[in-house]
Image (cartoon, rainbow, N blue to C red; front, side, top):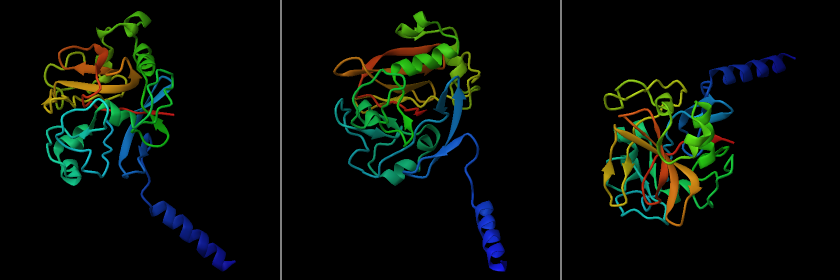
Length: 246
């Protein structure tokens, strides 16, 4: 009996002294990175940009953008050293920029809700379809007609998604309240020509929905207004990724 008590005590002590992930977070088993999450309506979203970067210098670096081969980028970094890329401030703040093939990780286009496309997302999470983005926007007050439109749409839903203030977003960061808890940051993008563009001013996020052979749907936010951008874009661009829980 004495041995049993000692064993139980030891187990309780070990468990209680082992660091546990905070509520509303999850850990990516691939690299151990912990992400904040947020429930918005019936969806659970990552509240940070995905920062998974494969340990393969062959896919990281300054190559000309591709619409068919996966490429991974860290804003402002032109080398191929994964450890060096992860040490940059822009990686720590904004995560990784993925072209559409990298975001999809070999999966076929989907506009289902949920998309069922894990893509580059961790186990138990998936890349949101265009329709899943619409669900988020309409929960925040966008009409179906506006959600189905292209270009800049809505009546302030982008402001509800953006992190408030100007610590990351350029002034005036119009309409930003982060009412949703989504905490969108302006991670910019990587042009197919190998130029990085608009960090601090704009943020872009892929969907799992192709709109043609060479383009796919994405969402965009900007510092100058509180609307949400939706339009097809060349798959060779490097955009951020937010994942949705399965």
